[in-house]
Structures are given as C-alpha cells and as structure tokens.
Length: 171
Image 1: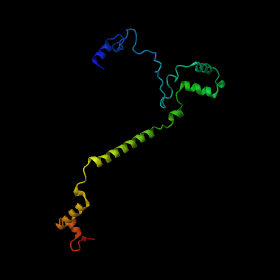
Image 2 (image 1 turned 45 degrees about the vertical axis):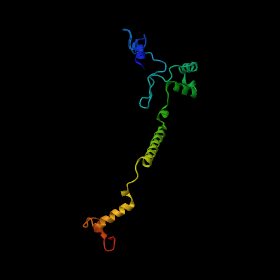
Image 3 (image 1 turned 180 degrees about the vertical axis):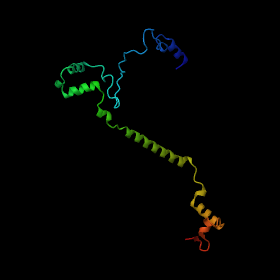
Image 4 (image 1 turned 135 degrees about the vertical axis):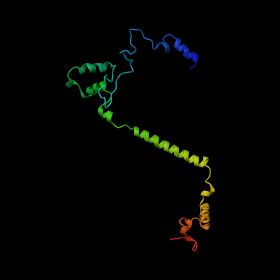
C-alpha cells in the first residue's frame, strides 16, 4: 500500500484512525456480539460451554424449544437429538473419536523422505565429482602390495601378518 493511500485511510472520517476512539460514556467492548462470532467453546476438558451452539433459531427450531418446556416423555428420540444438537456441537463419543490426521502427517513425512532421496540421487549423478582413483580396488591392491614390499611396520602391522616366503597371509 502506498503512503498516500495509507494516509487517506487514517484521515478519512470513520476510517482506520477512528476505530479506537470511543465516547466517554461507552465501553470499547460491548455485550453484543457480531452474528458469526460466539463464545461457544466445547472440548473434552471443558464440555459445558457458556452459550448454546445455535444462537439464531429458525421457526421449526423455535417450535421445538417451546415443546421442550413441556413434558419430555412426549418428545420423540429424534426431537431430543435435535434439541441436543441445538445446545451442543458434538457428543463425547464424537469428541473422543480418533482423527485421521496421522495419515496426512505420515503422508507428508514419506513425501519429504522421497523428495530428499531424489535430491540426493540428483546430487550424486550431476553435482558430485567422480570417485578419485585412489578409491578403486586396483589402487588399493597396489597400495597394499607397496606397503608389504617396503615391509612397513613389521612388528605389529600388516607386514607382521604376511608370509614373505609363501607370498600369502599367515594363518
């Protein structure tokens, strides 16, 4: 947002600059709530919310609430369930049921493992240099033969385990 647009919003009457101003007799937070926002909060640890789940009732739900004031033996099972659903969003069984979130988490973990594997493969093929000649089997055999020919470390090293007369390792 440009500086000019931000400045015009702050100077406009009722704009951003006017939101924090209240008259001396009023409070900043009133008791009225905007329709989509409620204080409904139910969990296993706090199962009884302060407000019912449905605040705005249609004609059928209002008739059911009037019927609720009478005898509960006259209510059918479906009406009792409907009244429960007006008050609460979920039952304890619905709150306690397992979620399938673990499948998403494991899918993401395996996706990133696969992506990492592809990245390592790509680096080995295109980024890393070829193995040096000193790591080939021929070079290692020549290096070992050179150490044995020089009789390096004849007391406890490789030369002590090599039989020079038979040209094989001692048993």
